Length: 337
Length: 235
Image (cartoon, rainbow over all chains, first blue to last red; front, side, top):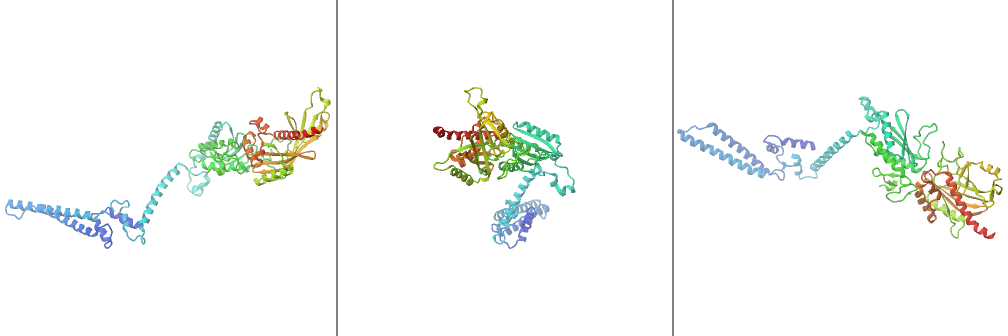
């Protein structure tokens, strides 16, 4: 409905000089407030008069001097006739100008162009076209803006964390894997080694028990141990345990499934998983790992730092287990808002 | 390597080794004075009720005992030298171990059959049977805290109350002292103890089971001395 109206209206914009006539023909009986229809029809008559008087000027020029006996008489008659027709042109032009002021300019500067004329509809309740049109206009504007932003972000960050997520469509048209998933193990080793050297109180042990994916055992001071399961340079899973807890299964492998026996480390595990989702920058996975480790390092004071909000050490029997992602300050889980 | 950080309720976990080095967490052992006009038993009940209100759950019992040995007179070189006291202690948290220690001296952690060895050594160390002192009571768990409220008895009579608070996730005593203190304040109020001397000397090293036993020894000595005053008066 809206589209019909606007396309009709738009087609009116850039057509011939007869646009006014067209409108009259389309809506002969409708009274538009603010548009003087009387003046409109008079103006059309005035245009016709102007055109005929202009035609007369050129006719007069084309005919030239004739039908007079003397040269003098001919000249006089021609000048007089020419003068007369020019006068009528200027008179008609003046009349047209006067009328055009009366007609008014209802829609020329309207941002919606001729569809703005809908606002003139006096029966709002029955045909709320205009308000709907405005809503749709705003909505589509916003949509376009957000779509632009989103496409910018998506181009920057591919959200595909694993090749499996590509699913069926990937099979249909084979695509190269995201580059971050096919990093050479040597590069991963280098990145982890650099992080290991960066934090003296943190020791990182890298192992590859199952193929190319690395597993890290991070020991933070004498406070806690963290098992980090990597996929290339993406961190897939993390488990936090106590410093004196067993992190190996009976056959000597890293135990990546069982959780800590202590409530405090179960809570920290939850927060670490949140941090994994928070620190995301698929174009630069090494930065993500470094940020995560920097954040993790703030747990060195897990038992020593009071909550930055309530100033206490304990709440429901737990120390402040939350660390702010930006400031690394300690908070209780319920104090962090 | 087997570790049982939190034993199942009501059961003392079996241990493969006599050396209980695997799990030792900072503990504070303190004495709570008997409330005025109340018996030891009533004061213990008062404390445990407070703990239960806090949300702590009962988790079996515990026992720490201490036997005193005098150095036998025959082994002493000088007449003027007084015999050193040696304490042999058992802790139900470490059922396969036996702790032998001197006051301010080294602490030996041995297998439980160390007691039999002591019987063989009675020519050098004589058991002062009357001085046997022990603390028995209930274990409570609250989050990652273990609390043991015990009645200290010497012979047939109850002499005092011991409260041991342990924070299991931590291994460095000084790291979690503030935490322990805040927790103790929540149910001990004004009787919250100051930082134990073993915490001060530990710095950043890992807390060991011997540190707990030393704290119990100091507590028992304190309680013994409190009681010795009237006894000496009668003599």
